[in-house]
Image (cartoon, rainbow, N blue to C red; front, top):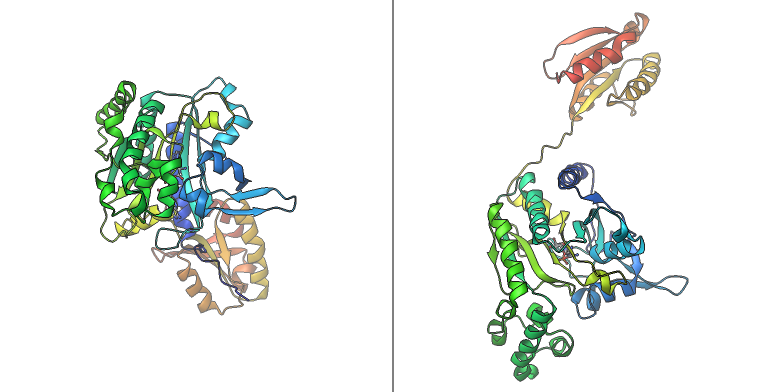
Amino acid sequence: MNMKAPRGTQDLLPGTTEKWQYVENTLTDICHRFNYKEIRTPIFEHTELFQRGVGDTTDIVQKEMYTFKDRGDRNITLRPEGTASVVRAFVQNKLFGLPNQPTKVFYIGPMFRYERPQQGRMRQFVQFGVEALGSADPAVDAEVISLAMSAYQELGLRSLRLVINSLGDGESRQNHRNALINHFEPHKNELCHDCNLRLDKNPLRILDCKKDQNHPAMETAPSILEFLNEDSNQYFEKVKGHLDKMEIDYVVDKNLVRGLDYYNHTAFEIMSDADGFGAITTLSGGGRYNGLVEDLGGPTTPGIGFALSVERLLMALEAEQVHLPVDDNLDCYFVTLGEKADAEAIRLTYTLRKAGIQVDKDYQSRKFKAQFKAADRLNAKYVIVLGETELENNIVNVKDMHSGEQEEVSINNLVSYLQSNLQGGK
Ligand code: HAM
């Protein structure tokens, strides 16, 4: 029997989950400021959604999806990414009909890809992403990019590199496509099986091939930037202009094509240049997908978004030795002596918790001294000592573990005493 977590998954244990919560809270707070509202979509969807949405010729759809038949013989897939699901929800729930456009949403949740696991590449990973649907204003591209950069910067990352490109509109892409076919056709026999299929179906994907990445024809392949028509060029210039005004540094990489089919116009990735970050340097990616809503059955609606994985974000924080201000203290810990006192502590623990105070006590029948040690290990700010004598006098002894001072407090006043001391940050 295999009782280990499946390859490419991980348990997040106490001590680590606090970091996740901190990161998730920060990201949620940033979305609040940028006015993106949370959306939660199902973890599984009909397989067809991703075949149509992400694209039949992508690695994700061809090799990486967790797909199965449910008991009703439906083809179901664990979501490999969030954009297709958000667009499906946008269409199904007719969000395009709401007066406030663009529709700006964010999500945080697990995604699943059957990839070869390595550091920063998991089979289950958590993506945080945003999508803005309903505006073709280049300022929205800049907004999404600035949100992505804020996410990293506010968490303390410094070694960041923003890489952008334009994939142009339909006409530009068609011209580029033809040029790519002409370019790669003579090398057909030297390219891998997948690239031969890509040549017919989607030659842009060849530029993304891991097997053929060192083939000399890759370097000389025509770049999309040479094929941008006037509109696409202007669009790209405007996006860059907004970024310049916002003082967000970027580099243009004409080879950036992204691994999903739905992109056009702006495409971007954020990389980590931190020493020791590892082989995979991409922290996040996104771009514009103006045809996707229509492809998935909705009205013509432009869209743009990006996604990052929390796993890679935490790796980058570690590589840059950023320590998150995670609070692992405990407000109070009861130390008791005698059965009656312990029973009273159980009652008081509940009273304090109901009053909003964080408190714990011993449940291992530890000796008096060992209870103090436990309080120490838990970083308790206050230890509340309750023995038989205290109980008889209806008092407790509250010890401030930071200063070492001890005070006698009436049990009747314990809640207000702790509330005012904890609030005072003592
Ligand atoms: P993606 O580039 O496939 O784009 O993934 C975005 C990010 O998810 C990556 O940059 C990386 O941080 C993380 N990621 C992907 N695969 C893994 C993995 N196996 N393990 C850990 N992290 C991973 C998308 O998914 C698009 N939906 C992004 C988007 C949103 N475009 C527009 N809107």
